[in-house]
Image (cartoon, rainbow, N blue to C red):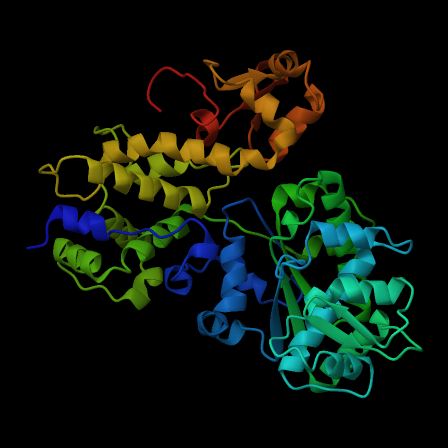
Length: 486
């Protein structure tokens, strides 16, 4: 006989990190934002950490067949989708290599990106068996001895060939990779891109370079990271008018995008997609994840006296979704006619200062509640996870948010520390100025930044005074000591 502990052990809501999610395609939930990504005119996918950017990246680059099935006619046909992480996709392009490149007199981040894009595109076209009499053919013949097409380890050498002194010999080597060039000329990246564009245009095809994790480049130097990313978007603007068949799909954190300043940024404003989740979509996400287990699905089917087809889960209406969820979770954290339903209680505690609610924290909430429930002695409650286990999971979720998100902003570490031990969650502008007056960045800049990253919800109080409230998502994690329930 299957026991409650057996079911709890089997229950699995999956990983919060798309990179380590082994069954991503099976657990994926389609949103309105996802449908827009296949639009060739949409080039920038924005969302906070945990909103699903990396899941989208992996679906398009690692699970292309499943994504084609999900999107149906909406999938971009005649399109070569290339995984790109701005140099992080190959270990050889590390910080030291980039620093060496930067010593070149002619160095510019725009040239870095053009070389990177040109060579990544050449790699894919070579894999597909394409050739030409032009620059692409020269590059592909140079890559002929590299069977796995990891061409980017040669980027440093190619860079020196483009902007540095040409070597005296005809063979340029870097680690285990070599490129043959004639002595009388160097690689012309503009001609390479033009050749690639011509071939793609003639064949009626396109290349999508999907760039993710690019914020990790130069992540310890925020000013240089900003320059690097601004250069990428300038290149993107240039490609829109010149290399229409080579499209850059850039996935980036919303707060980083907001901080970038470059000429004609407004020209790509309508090319953005902002990832958003509503409660119904989040509910579907949790249900689809827990139903992947045959044992759990059978248990729910017995509980609801019905059969469940996994392929239909996303089409279930909200009432059916709630029935599925509450066959596993208790109805409420605190019992009573005026108390919130458990799912609403959870979503209010994963909401950031902009009102956004995203998968990462909800998945974490469910996983932590399951762990807590497993440590408790079995009781007569017929649901697998009790409301009090969800309540106790909140503290861990808030701490994880502090450790995984707020640490992205080291310049604000001391500002966050000032809230430790505070007995309130709302502060006036004057309160914050006094708290931060001896810190850098200065109070006005720090407050604005905290609003931008969703740490504060900015409101208006009496006499139109600005009030800054810390969402529940962060309260335990930063050490607020508040009376009453969490």
